[in-house]
Length: 95
Image 1 (cartoon, helix red, strand yellow):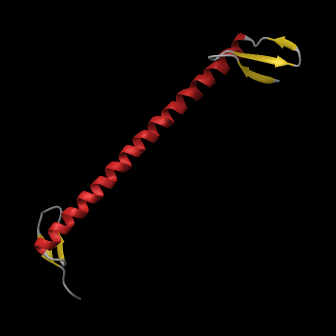
Image 2: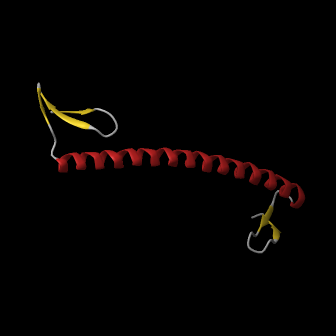
Image 3: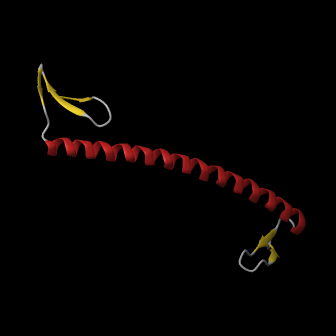
C-alpha cells in the first residue's frame, strides 16, 4: 500500500493496479494528522526565528554589559565589588 499525495490533503490508497478508496473516517484521520503535522512544522520554524532573535539580543546585552563593566572598573577600580541590590561599592579584601 502506498499513500500518494494528489494535491492539498487529497490522498488515495493504491494497491497494484486496482484503485480503492479510503473510508471517510480513515481519510479524515489521515487529513487531520497531516494538517497537525504541517501546523507543527510551521510552529517549529517560528520558534527557530524567535530563538535566533533572542540569541542576538543576548549577544547585544553581553556586549553592553562588558562595556559598562569596563567603565565601572575604570571609575571604581579593578578590585571593586558592586552590590546590585543596594548599589554599594566595596573593595575586595586581599586574603
